[in-house]
Image (cartoon, rainbow, N blue to C red; front, side, top):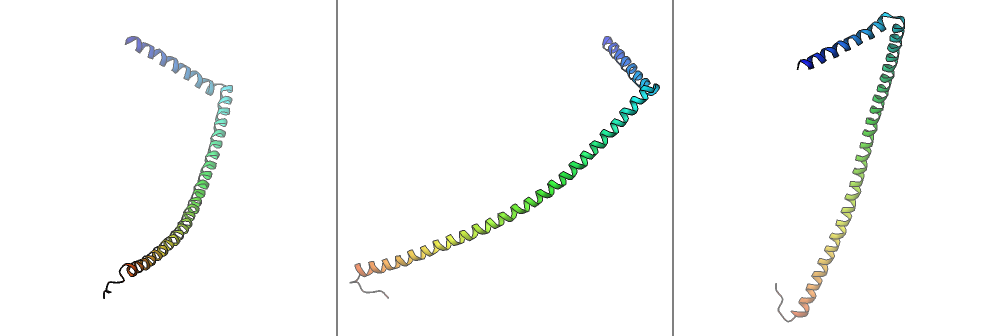
Length: 127
């Protein structure tokens, strides 16, 4: 455990010296100041580019949300139209089916009359 602490101490000591040397270079020498200024300018340019890209993405996102809303409305309208068309078709089919049922009922009444007249003609009629 003592050896681990010793290693951590030396690593910290080395890291502190390295950071100190970097700071001394950037703050204490002309070349370091020029390099620091160039890095600062490059960083600002990069931040501006990132900000522009972010704004562009936000605008595109708003546009996509708007288009999505319009598309949603179109789909809803189309569904309503299809629903009305299907409802009309269903009503027509139901009407046709009811007409066929009525026709079958009429035929059944006629068939029943025919059967009665044929098989039960000798029986007295009920009142």
